[in-house]
Image (tube, rainbow, N blue to C red; front, top):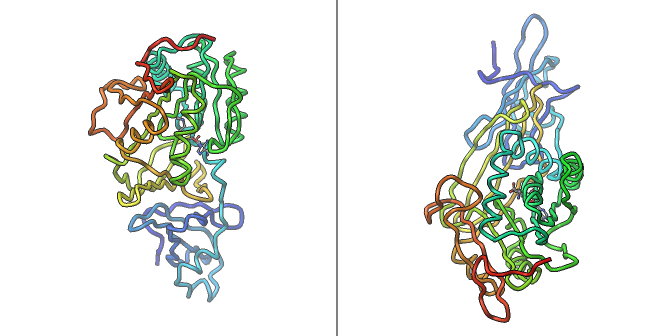
Amino acid sequence: MSVCHKQARAAAVGEGFACYRGLRQLVVEWVGCEEAGGSGRIAVEIRHGGNILSAMSKAAPLTPRNRSRSTSDDAIELIAPVVHNWTWWSDFLQREYYATSDERAEWRRAATSIARAVGLRPGMRVIDLGSGSGELVFNLALHGAEVLGIEQSAPLVEHCRAEAARRGVAAGFVAADMYTFQPEQKVDLVVSTNTSLGFGADAANRAMIARIANWLVPGGIFYLDTLTADNAEEYGTWTDTVAGGKLVVHNTWDPETKIMVNDPIWIDPSGTPHAADRPEIVQLYTRDDISTMMRAAGLEPSILRRAMGRRVEQTEEDAVTTWAAVRRDDGEVQPMGATRRKQ
Ligand SMILES: C[S@@+](CC[C@H](N)C(=O)[O-])C[C@H]1O[C@@H](n2cnc3c(N)ncnc32)[C@H](O)[C@@H]1O
């Protein structure tokens, strides 16, 4: 009798099974055991909701206990967790997924588009909040700006520093929590791209916009590119090929709380799944809410139609919205591209 699911794949790791323990929503279900050629196999399925994310089997003794196991708890006992913290995930995902060589041209275009939108000039000081792979930092620096990437993942920051040196780009990176980070001097531009704001509690996110406004010189710009609550939707479970393995992300969106959750799992080429210790939780805001927060912080927001080097114009129907919000000077709003402080 074969009890392995059709999608079963061998995934023995050392003595045990790899597992997605740590992601509470995932159910590891004991499927059963089979007898083949005198030896036994046990099989488990990893499910999320109704979807089977993965199924595995491995050789195991056909003890009376194994034969009679039936609960998911029992199955969990059998498997060894492969759990990494979120820092590892940021590092892995940003480098292996968002900064591959085929993404490089996109990053160059994004930097050029930002530079045009804000009137970036050599010597201007720039902060990239949640700088991820550092690609935007490198490319803005190539426009002659003095750019500092703020990123919570220390390994990612190490990678970015090494990469800056390797490429011969003068760019700085600081491993810090953006919610507590304080720049030493005022800057001309703060960028936050690809939904990098909203990782804090609501009050902290709102306070963050006011803090950003205070970091800017009069006439300085906050460039924000983010998913908004207006058109956010649930992506469900999606998969892609990453670093030769399979990325499986379970995404949920709750329009009531305006919270989006991403549970990523990467199944490496040998079949070993790697899970984070927690999902990524992002608080989204409506366009109106963001513009209101910006105005309250002394910024004058404009929503951009062409942004981030995207080939199509952005409309109100799009999931992503991009702002260039100018820091008012003594209550006076400076138009975009107006004269800003030279270094
Ligand atoms: C969605 S990614 C976007 C990265 C990059 N801005 C881009 O456009 O690709 C968000 C990044 O913010 C970082 N991050 C999340 N919370 C942070 C915090 N509190 N302080 C600093 N960085 C943070 C994550 O590690 C991740 O690299």
